[in-house]
Amino acid sequence: MNFSGFFVELKSENMFTQSIWNAYGVQQDFFELKKDIEVEVAIVGGGITGITTAMLLKEQGREVAVFEAREVGKGTSSHSTGNLYSITDELLSPLKSKYDIDTVREVVEARKSAAGLIEQSIVKYKIDCDYKKQPLYLFNTDDKKDIGQEREIARDAGLEILSLPDDFPVEAKEGFSIQGQAQFNPLLYIQGLAAEIEGGNCNIYENTRVRKIEEKEGHYLLHTTSGVVRAKYVVQATHTPKGVELQYHTVLGPYREYGIAAKLDNDNYPEGIFWGYFNGDKYSFRSYTRNGESYLLCVGRPHKVGQAVDNREHIKELTSFAQNHFAIKEIICKWGGQNYKPADLLPYIGRKTSNSKELLATGFSTDGLVYGTLSAIINTDIIVGKENRWEEMFKASRHQPGKAAGKFAKENLDVASQMLKDWLFKGEDAELSSIQPGESKVLVRDNKKVAVHRTTSGELKAFSAVCTHMGCVVNWNNAEKSWDCPCHGTRFDMDGEVLEGPAFEPLPRIKE
Ligand SMILES: Cc1cc2nc3c(=O)[nH]c(=O)nc-3n(C[C@H](O)[C@H](O)[C@H](O)COP(=O)(O)OP(=O)(O)OC[C@H]3O[C@@H](n4cnc5c(N)ncnc54)[C@H](O)[C@@H]3O)c2cc1C
Image 1: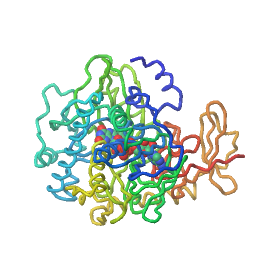
Image 2 (image 1 turned 30 degrees about the horizontal axis):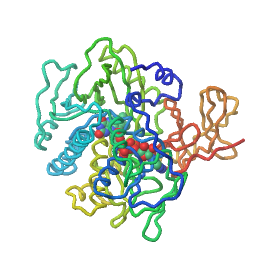
Image 3 (image 1 turned 45 degrees about the vertical axis):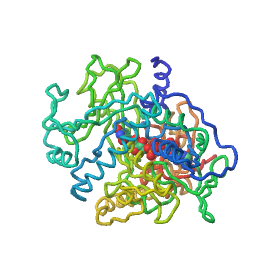
Image 4 (image 1 turned 90 degrees about the vertical axis):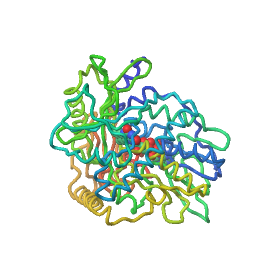
């Protein structure tokens, strides 16, 4: 693989978010929607959730169209670590404490089934995405994180557990392995699926952003940037529901986490999925090999979206971690990725309200390659009227105040305090000329908060700093060059357009 072009891009300030998957992705050009259309099922979002849902519905003979704001697979799915496992990022003991061992077993079974669908689809469609069975190693290196119960709970949930091997690459205090997990290149998988299913009763549109979803006379109207879509069903496969959906946004905590891919000085690329706790912090690492080139991938250093004082510090800390534990020769890629943590530890999948034909798939934490696939299975069954064993457990419209209370209170208190703090104190009374190339500030002008960025070439870009979702004031993300909302996680690019998160509308440009 010739990385020279990729390196040049990476070094320019806007290419921070290129993941290793992007370096190996293929060029796919699906058409932009150019006219009004009618379709049975409209899927908003072309990540793993949207494309898998389209595949399953097409296989059931349904007429379906996917509307992707940017490019298929290039959202969070291609900013992940590409691991497929049956446990969850938060581990199984919190799930058992909140629910019981039967719920843990069902979650594990549901996730196994979804991971199984990924494997079957790769075989069925012969997708070249470096799929490999691997063990998952869960371990700690000190007393700061207790993982003592995890082995027993995982075994009780039906997973095959082994001790850590003698040649384990890290000095672990305690740990074990879970057999039969897997890894792949998520972007090549999604792109492979998309290429297979496009055509016939399934159309995929790229660069087609949905700006509004309206329910009218038993149908839905999706107002996109280039046409109106009339549909009987809508699946929001947008990672988090779009628009003001308080029932959901008050129970989801938006977090950002970082990844790096590096070449090593030696050939000791570790094989497997590694989840380790170092000084109480979790780091995930794995290796990836394609076309004879190997890389070490490291992921960690999470924080709430829009609330890091200095985003670059997080990536520096991640890099130091990697350098302390591996013979790093060169960092090839750095990227950030978003996740939405559900207050009651389970994702929200299914009808938006009890009889609605608008379906959701969200709250995946960092487990959504599998949960997104599970959502596709459940939402397809709902649409075709087939009973699904897991529909009730993950029901989006569930209300579990007892289970969600602690995190619900914490997240909402955080949102309220951010709003208050930002409206009262954020914003400087500085001159525009004081903003240096590459710098950004929230200024106060005529009592309005203005987000100003001066590009490295000196151009000033100014927008209202008020998030178009629910009115919080955005913060500058100095690593990924975006305006990030600290309340519900919408991120806007340097031109004010929505990158991800619940807002439909861009930040209004200020012309002066
Ligand atoms: C650092 C990190 C590591 C992770 N590692 C793993 C892992 O190893 N294993 C795992 O299972 N999970 C992992 N995850 C989680 C996983 O990546 C996500 O949960 C999953 O990719 C979500 O898929 P999705 O299709 O729902 O969302 P996305 O992949 O984000 O797709 C949503 C799509 O919707 C589009 N969209 C949004 N708004 C609109 C609109 N208005 N109109 C049209 N289109 C729109 C977006 O452009 C995007 O392409 C990780 C997450 C992070 C952050």
